[in-house]
Image (cartoon, rainbow, N blue to C red):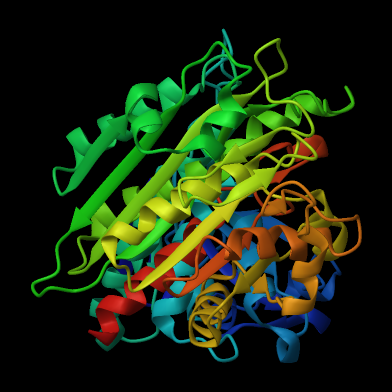
Length: 498
């Protein structure tokens, strides 16, 4: 979709549709008032009749409104004006774009970006309007023999800003929002592909395609012999039961003008997770194709960063494999040696994500990083704790945690920080190895993070458990593209601070 930024009065816009807001209790926004005046009170008349109350989520499409140059005027309910915040703004944009895409308005001018949102400037509103609009029209139909045809799909959106002095900031914000949305789409496409297509080999190929598209990104793919030579016994223990060969994918983006320590992203890339010998129940096992969404978010974030070209250094590490049961598979009670030299008693082969991340976190040491963030659909306990709203955020650095939480708030891709106290480490004790890969049921997300922390002692580290946020279930089943917005916002803040 194409996005442009404009400043001007709504009644003067020649467009297939002009989109304006109405607040609860039938209060017109300023842009709606301007159209009302131009139409000699037509909008007020519609409101008085009760066709539009201004409730959040409501829409009303009007044709041939007198006094305007647009073919249509779309009224969008914004809820109570005093409660108009991030969520309400984004929902208003989403409702408008969905309706426009379904009604043949191939282009439109949106004035919702002029509405004041508490704590948010024009640039924020423009950036989020682009991200939400792209998400609203996203469809995954690559595997369908006959994709659904959208009649005259929405192709161009003009986002209005209050003043001409806002145009430059608005254009930069639109470019940033589009890059984030493109990264999310890339991550969603990978997550939505089935496990028989999106294999470790396929992930590596997509990473190499990304490097060809964006020459600033360098990709190296390590295969099993090289992984063995590195001593990644923990990673290899997970892939032993699969016929699909593992891949360890390294992405490098080095554009800092000075010798800046890199930021490192580590993404869990289990392209399908049966649980291994500790096999999962059959119900909903199909959703385990999403167990590589951590890896997808790393690739999506690199897609965003490569498009925006910030002056910084970024590394991506993706251990990719399947977790399958077979005669070769790791068994409960087996002991494996990690790249760090520490040994792990594998009490449950379905706690495999931490095993592959452990070796990747050790590999990250060679970069002497400024900070490392791993991203993983790690624990069902995280879904129980936070549902599908926030990602769990664990860290050994309060400074890093605060920066990530702030980025998540700005990106509306929020995290929440549980404790990572030393007391929780005790549950990982083992009589036979240095420690076990699981503790008891209590605090399962925390003890999983405790396990990872044992491999991240040489740098500032954070762990994002995205088990509840990486995909949706039910009617809207599919990958969300999270936490690409959080990661991209955090990374770009480093260029701003440099």
